Image: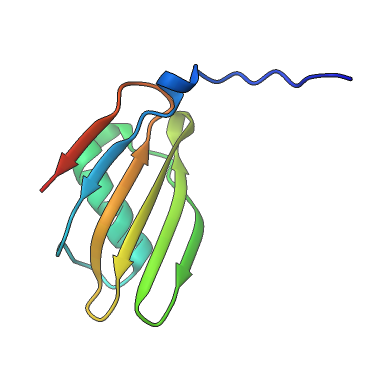
Amino acid sequence: MSRRSHHRAPASIGTAALVIALVGCSGGDDPASVCTDAIADRMGAVFTDVQITENIETPVAADVRGTYAGGGGFACGLSLHPLALEQALVFPFDGPTITVEL
């Protein structure tokens, strides 16, 4: 039986998350763009090479997930009608957990 080697930081470091709670923030007309624009505004140059991996819309809400350079991930919850970002979660590859609320 072979084991795959995972080249990730220890759980205490690898599960770091940056939480951006943006109640009522809105802009643009595409949930993925609203999500990534808000995160890019907060993270700056660190948030590059963004890839959307999931973009699910229901009649009242949207969920967007993806990755960015260096192995980080993100997820956003948005309300629709009007389109507004309710919460954005950013999961850096490593680093401490940071919570940012507006």
